[in-house]
Length: 334
Image (cartoon, rainbow, N blue to C red):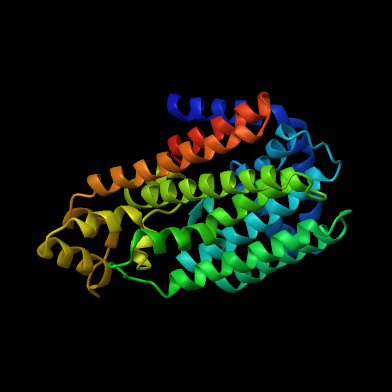
């Protein structure tokens, strides 16, 4: 049963999507048709992905950015579909990398089947997304999203090589978070304004930066929830970052201000072989609240900075919705 808070969040999301709900319905229908398969095994797996539909913020950003900029090209729901399918592919692959068990309160693909199947299903999603992009009237989507996908993969690779890097600076953390998460937010806003051929470079750049900053704020909040959120409220496995050795912004902030004995306890929570629940060990080893507060302040600053970029748009319901979306990212619990 949903709490009052969760119902209010659902209502807020519905208000954000309202200006583009018709386009969102077209996007959902397109994704459903693209995931359909004549093969029973594949169909069972793609049907399971319907449980991961979630907030669909990236697809919404395509349509809201387009609507706010006066772009009504008929391909835009398909552009949003390509973005959404790539996002689904990243979720499936991320769950393998994280060893996650639950997403959207249902079993992850790797948990219900296995890692091999999940990797292949993610690959299939990428293939179908890029095939759809080749059917559109402009090559812009293929060009932008092929570059975005490369950056996402590079971000994940760099993060994998930065496990237990407690001396990492904030700039490096934000580079990784920006690459693996904010890249798709940036691409969504850029394509919404620019497709099929950019005729207002200043507006395109401003909206691309808006998407990047909101996306980075989203990842910071996600890292906070993984550290201090509860699985029942978040709706997915938590504690994966600590288990995988990922040192996220709230931990970096806590570590930077800690004395050596606390730093040693943090390192032990991440690295000692005999630790069972690493997140619980970390939370026992130190007071994370100041680090969480610093991370959330950074996320709030990013959203404020992003909202300032909306000055490139005329007043209207979609501009208002874009501003509301940034606040929604800060307030989300799932």
